[in-house]
Image (cartoon, rainbow, N blue to C red; front, side, top):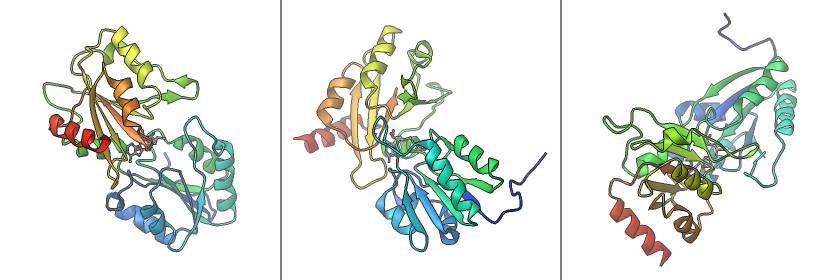
Length: 258
Ligand SMILES: C[S@@+](CC[C@H](N)C(=O)[O-])C[C@H]1O[C@@H](n2cnc3c(N)ncnc32)[C@H](O)[C@@H]1O
């Protein structure tokens, strides 16, 4: 058994979770990784406040990837990581939220390992944790749901397939990442598998950021309410959860739309 990943070179990669955007949700370990980094390769979703902290002494390189849109190819990002480490650089690979959640982390680790470089993971607060806090709810609750699913709305092949029958059962809770474009697809699949149309669905856009917005709706009205809301920022969709004070949240959102 091996407990270290160091294989004799000076280059090193820290895969760091930037959290959902609020710099106060960065870990102390993330901050100390910034202090020793030569270069920070970051995603598109990293907030300006966090980039300001990360770029105090390191070079910032944007390798942002947009869902469905133009993007850096994963192979190019892997190559860049390896190139910097081979030059003996300390690299921070800064990913939004937690790097282990829908972050294509393994592909990058494998590239760094193949080059014989050392690496470690610095966890961050994932979007689901920040978003659920903003609606005053808990991801699991005794007597309601003893499990919670983290789903992606789309994968490399298009809209992602899931265990719809299990999700359609009363009390199911899912945190759906990248779920805006697939909202109508998800709604259709769940209803087809017997989900109650009145199941609460909540979207939290820009969780933890000053421009955070909360949309409280139902499975039945999800596509139409989402279209009306015009959410352009990253959003986390909760299936099976309403804000603790759903009525108040809805009023605030509707006021903003007016
Ligand atoms: C490629 S995934 C990366 C997830 C990230 N690793 C994490 O743990 O949060 C990007 C998706 O995460 C969600 N997301 C990231 N930051 C968010 C935020 N501040 N508010 C709401 N959703 C967010 C959105 O669903 C977005 O499309």
